[in-house]
Image 1 (cartoon, helix red, strand yellow):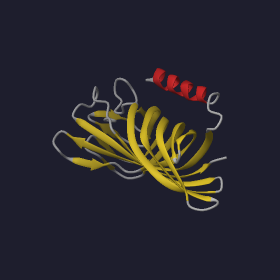
Image 2 (cartoon, rainbow, N blue to C red; image 1 turned 45 degrees about the vertical axis):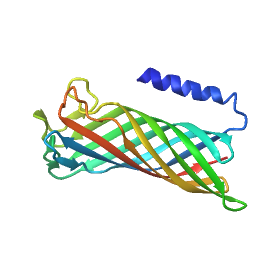
Image 3 (cartoon, helix red, strand yellow; image 1 turned 90 degrees about the horizontal axis):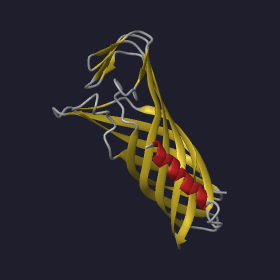
Length: 222
């Protein structure tokens, strides 16, 4: 999967030398993620939301008229802090925990842009997002049990661990969004939903985890 990301990013960089009319659009904003875990018995539970931010850039290439394509590269950072007892269908904890996640994303969006005035436009986008999680780690301030795996106070749990981890690092999302451009600034809102199971089924068979990402941000269309 890492080779896929490297190859795709290298191909995007090659476009920089061949598309003189294209535009690099950096952006950043607020990110809110929600995981929905479903067990084979039909029970469904939504985990607490994870909040954070994203930053990166897209390479917007006009195709015809208002239509374009925009491959990009973005980094997500998510955080979660729990102070009370709780859990989900497969995780239980007593005390507090801190969670940190870092994701690499390559969106490939079709874009639409309609002028609504001399200095304003309506923008819309939709397409797949290829994601690879490079870090997903929890630090527990007290006792925790993950499907019978007991972790002591202060221990860091690697959610990507090949033996005991619960998270599949690779995923594909489908989503889109819309916004308004005024001058060089774009104000956008977008939503992505995972198409693949985020749960590592080698270690946690019988569970299906899907994630929805809400993004609110600002792009700089220089």
